[in-house]
Image (cartoon, rainbow, N blue to C red; front, side, top):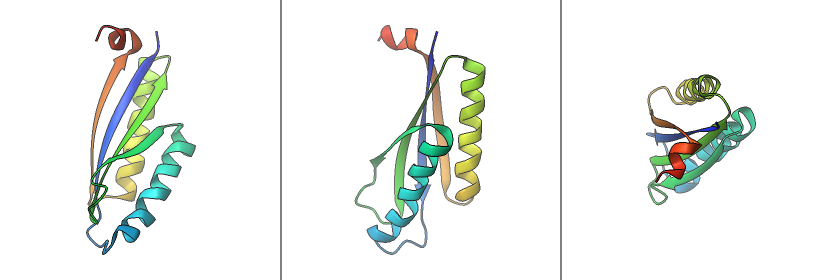
Length: 101
């Protein structure tokens, strides 16, 4: 049974002085998460704020343990790039659970 892990990534950019400055940090991070982890990533909140962004990333896998390990690696990657300004939340569900909603 396949599993889905949804990660909500809250970022703070204390030195961003404009939306353009924020984009210079958000866009490469989104690309890296897509390439490195195969995640689907979208900016989902705080579009109009200079110093905050919320990204939502999704990972899909056949085994819960492997997917949890991939989510752990993604989390470490984000935190290593934003040590003072990242908070992550995640939820792991089976696709069977999704069908029950």
